[in-house]
Image (spheres, one colour):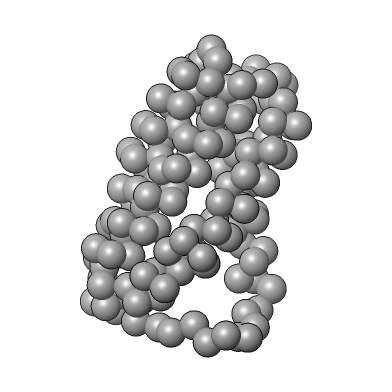
Amino acid sequence: MIEALTRLDWIAIGLATLASYVLGALWFTPLFGRAWDRSLGISRERGTRYPPIYYLMPFVSSVLVSVATAILVTAIGAEGWGESAVLGLVVGIGYSAAVTFTNAVNPVTPHPLAFAAITGSYHVVSAVAAAVIIGAF
């Protein structure tokens, strides 16, 4: 596993990070933004400015997920984008979506299943995309 750290492709990691970040911007704004807001019981007003952490933390998380995915792809010896996509599905569903569903079911989320479905599916698609990009390199 430690050896995998020396063989990481940082260009692939950068591209996977960018893809995940851009996908999140699209997913939670024009694609599913209104439904996601409703699931949280909020309404996003046009022109609302969010603090920098709102944009920074998803980027940091995208970097961490991309690095972890690259380590796993390298460590298990996934060959090509097909095997990497399967790894992305396992990680996306088995960890990201599962944790998202668990975190969503709490007394303060007005529509936990909608929130979990929107957020969890983003994490699955993002994990698969990152793994495919990394595996293709």
